[in-house]
Image (cartoon, rainbow, N blue to C red; front, top):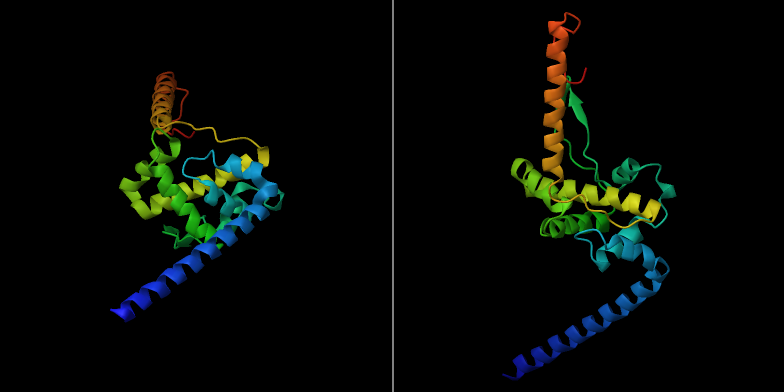
Length: 203
């Protein structure tokens, strides 16, 4: 019995030590991130991004986006752009490149948290992709979207503006309307003998 009690006391001492260490590190993080408090608050307007996640984003990519020529450069640097592999004219499924490990770990967590949010663009984006690509790739795609949005928000100093969960429904309806309009125009041009023989929506 005594050895068990002694082990319990040692475990309690270790837990207290870990709690003190975490508290000390948390205070130090707060001191270092204080000059960027406005940017941290800005990033927290993104669904799925909490205070700690915003701090990781600022620590990894910085608050000044001048170091990245474009959002695509940031995504590529962070390892959230799929590789583009082609062989004999056929595109193969590419894997994302390696990036900063803390960013690579935190952004998918944000994506999964965003997927649980209600009535948001990011949630709709995740669930739209999950059925076709699986939860892992859907989370990476949403993480990529969060990173791109973070770039624009930090660059312009504006908060998150949600497109809404109906965004993809509206976009699909717009594409359908455009298709019908262009198709009708092509049929009319063919009847008049002035249109191309082959139907091409992009043309």
